[in-house]
Length: 300
Image (tube, rainbow, N blue to C red; front, side):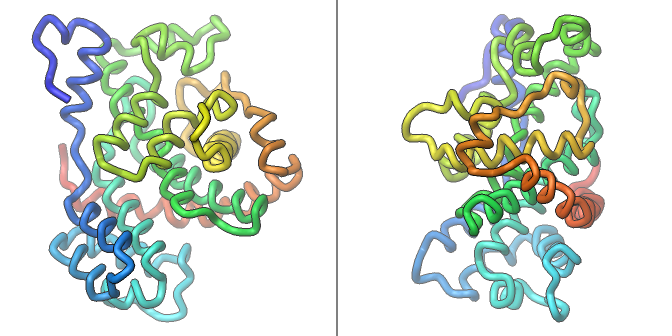
């Protein structure tokens, strides 16, 4: 994707493309780790080799691995040990979480949202998606934690563009009854969900993660070929996280859960409420690690 010219920057689409080009990419170690995990011949040593060159990421991986969320019986002191104890999937999730935390700016101005609150919502989406999956399916599908974590990544771009005119989104929402996505589209001709899918593609993340970001507000509208169960889980988790007060933003009052998504998952309201209540402590524990992960990126 090329940078737009000066005239194009006056259009919403041009500004979005330009801001997306400014968005930091994930560390190369994440791509190396993903390749190692996808290779059936990889060993714990290969996974360690993929991560070890990035000292900050290694530090934050070990910080997360030793957090109460993962509940390790003993202290994890090396990446190799983390792989042996947590498994490659959890190491990937913890590594990507640490890398994503370093990309988040201090504030998402268009949404009037501070970084810590945004991170809290992302973590809530990850943990709730995984727990809803276990309640609905008895297992957590591959990539569900990551899909839940990154579902709102498009807000990093859209928030920056909306921040050029403070209060613009709030003004569009006030008294109009418009949904958050409706207001975004009216102002910018796109939404944070659509842009989120593009960001995931730019970061070369697995396609299901991109599609979950793209359709997490409209799971019933997802086209054929999309893993609807993954999208449904992220959709419900997103709304539950907001209902719990994790990541309150400008569009808070216009949110609704797609009842068809809940039915497709085979969940009852009571089950969803129980999942939400049981996840609060773990969400807060993992979110507290934001300060440590973000501190490694320095001021921007």
